[in-house]
Length: 318
Ligand SMILES: C[S@@+](CC[C@H](N)C(=O)[O-])C[C@H]1O[C@@H](n2cnc3c(N)ncnc32)[C@H](O)[C@@H]1O
Image 1 (cartoon, protein in one colour):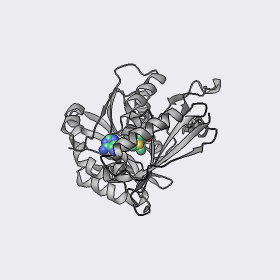
Image 2 (image 1 turned 45 degrees about the vertical axis):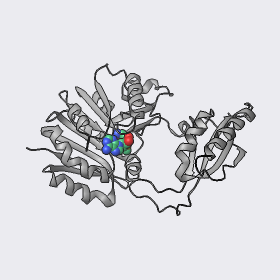
Image 3 (image 1 turned 60 degrees about the vertical axis):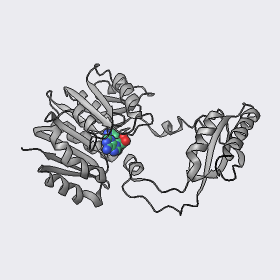
Image 4 (image 1 turned 120 degrees about the vertical axis):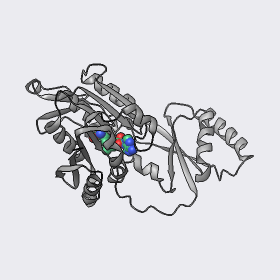
């Protein structure tokens, strides 16, 4: 589908209020381009360990919004201009000029799907929900996945490193805690390997719908997995809801900078003998995570590598 793209130039310090004004005028969904540095919490939610230095913040924000090609945008733009003129009486909102351009003929929401095809992680077949299982693969362990906007197609090295550890440690008694569950892929692998139950946590609300859809796509019986949104590192409500001394396995495929504060907290949720499977660690940070794991009193069992990524598996012996 072709879209007309409109770009509104404003000031980064007022972008939130300008976006809500655009919403009042009927603009659904805005893309922000600015040079405001990411906050610590932004960085925690992104799967990057090292961020390049961005250009200096010049205080300007460009807000892009899209209108279907065959829509008459005149009325919409008039409403936008009227709302912005009102807002200008209360604060400086910059130039607020609007320029138009046309986008390529692409299905922006689904375009990434052309890069995601079925593939094997050792003997486990991972298949996107829009592809068919070949007859010769029907006897294999198959994970159907549609990550939506949550992280976790299974293509990332760190997910694969965690999957291999799950294969070694999951039993029919396993109660799993999957911190940073994303698409739910690690819980689904564990449940397919026979785990009794899984609890997933994430900061990203998209994880709720993504895991629900993926559990259904994999015909996992209802009640096998619970998902909660919140930060188990410092949110007592999430900690209490997850429960203490309870988990046979904890997976955490997150960044090293998150694993360091997570580790001393997560040990209280693990049973004696419980296994802690971590990844999301870029090779430079291997020692940092190994040290954090040891400092929390865990015994390091294995450190595995794939490409530049690392996984550390440890056991709670107390
Ligand atoms: C690399 S993805 C892992 C997704 C999936 N588990 C996998 O292995 O493919 C990391 C996930 O952790 C989430 N996350 C980051 N910090 C977190 C925290 N403190 N607590 C829970 N989830 C967190 C992110 O939103 C993201 O979904």
